[in-house]
Amino acid sequence: MNFADIKSKLKPIFYNDMSILDVHSCFFMDEIYIYIEIDDNYCWKISFLSCYKVDYETDANWRGDYKVRDVKPSSGYYGQEIFMNINSENEDFVEFTIDLTIMTMKIICKSIEVEKINREDIKFFWETK
Image 1 (cartoon, rainbow, N blue to C red):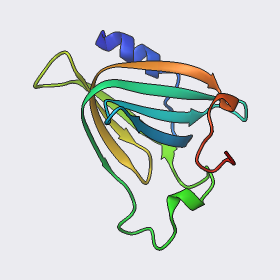
Image 2 (cartoon, rainbow, N blue to C red):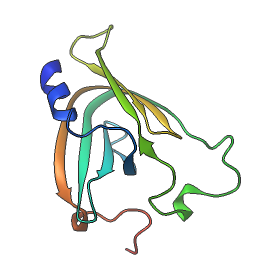
Image 3 (cartoon, one colour):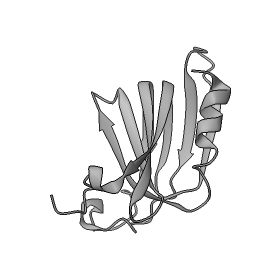
C-alpha cells in the first residue's frame, strides 16, 4: 500500500482527544483493530493488516487496583497522535507510533483499512452480550 494513501486515509480520523473505544487483536496478532468513537451510532475501525511487529505499554504499573474490563468507555484512553514512517528494515512495511494517552503502541504492518461502521454491528467489552 502506498504511504501517501495510508496517510490520506488516516488524516480525517486522528485528532487530539478522540475517544478510543477498544483495541482488538486477531489471528495471532496478524491484525490489530482500533475502534474510535464518532458518535453514539458510528465509530471508525482502523485495521492494521499483516502485522510484523506490535509493541505496547499500558498504565498497569501505576493505575492502582481497578481492571480496565470493569470501566466504561470513558476509561482514559484518548487518541493523541499517530506518527507514520516507512520501516527502515523493509520498505514494504509502514511503522506506526500511536499515543492513546495511557497506552502507547508501535505497530509495523503492510497495510491498513479504515471503515466507518455502525456500533450496533459490534459489541464492546462494557456492553451486555
